Length: 117
Image (tube, rainbow, N blue to C red; front, top):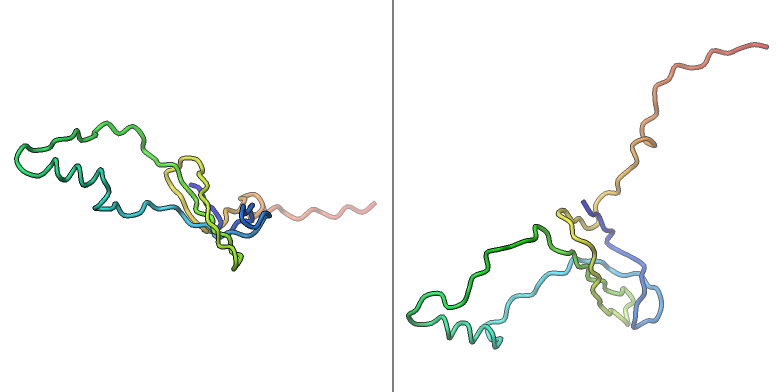
C-alpha cells in the first residue's frame, strides 16, 4: 500500500527553485479516432476477412508503474511534470498517515511500591 501526500515541495524547472506542487495521479487520455494507426487499423478491419492483426494474450505484469503529475502552485507558473514511482498494487493519494503501534498503546503496568530509605 503506497500512500502519497496531495502536496509536495519539490524543484520547479520554470521557477528555478523548490516550490509546493499539487500531486495527482497521471491518467491516459482518450484514444483519438483520427490517429494514423487507428485509421489504418479501421480500414484494414472493414469488410470481410475477420480479425487482421494479432490480439495480445500473454500479459506478464500484474501491476503498472505509478506516475505522479506534479503541478506548481505558483499562480504565474503552473508548470507540470511527471514523476514515475515504483510498481504497487494499491495506491492512495492523501490518505491517513499510518501511526506507529508502540507509541500509541501504553502498557498497563501496576504502580511501583514506594520504598522508604
